[in-house]
Image 1 (cartoon, rainbow, N blue to C red):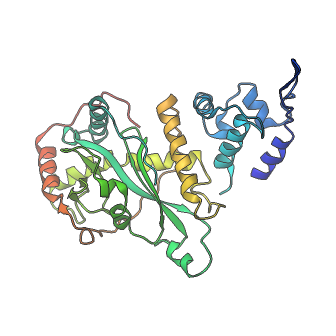
Image 2: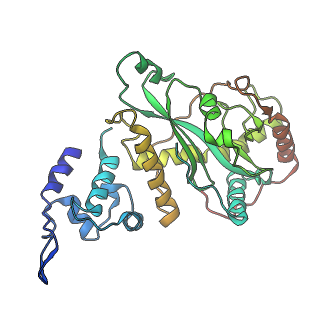
Length: 339
């Protein structure tokens, strides 16, 4: 499919615009609209079937990437080729934390809305890891990329806000590495710049429950004892699952990430994943281009590991306090349409 699009785009004929003693020579000849993909794009048709982005999101992206080119296809065609590849190929970078008190409050209220409980008004993000299939490197090092499901992968660790927009990404560790170890070496953990004091990030049972250096609140382990702990886990899951839906939207929009192994060198995979995370954010933040999921996210059976790997202060007392608040307080009324 990619080769087909490349060969078709080569038929798009360009002439250069230049000036010769005050005379302007035509640089570009017309776009070959016999190419269906280009016909739909340049004639203002729906762009979702070809690029998995709405026309509004695509316009914002092209405006951000627009540049004056004196060679090549130009930024528009090159961007379309890249997006088409991400959408149809069979197949550590920080984003932006909430930077004002108002932005942080909006995120926290959003998570309370997702959880349907006021006890989660200090939740400032949700974290999880995602395995991206790759072609493993040759030699003995290739085995370390095989995860516990036995396919080679590179790990994306991401934190998202209440709308599913990524506010932190960390990419590159081999698939055999446990989530807690990836966390330990991430800038998010080592620099402790987010979340602000008094706030916490929601995580699944594959992570340790922490208070310091990074406040992470995980669900109670199975078997869950007591009605209070069960209720806490229910509300926790409602809020935390936004990160799984964020991964699901990326999976649906950019199929080359998840469906088959990326046909690029493993050292380049983090750049591709980071580009997809940025595009995902542009779609959500710029024009609210939410991608409907084509299938349900397959939730892993999380391993309860990591508590003894990290030199930390346990977050269990904080979790117990939140659990008590869940039992004592009423559920928050839903006044927003969250993802």
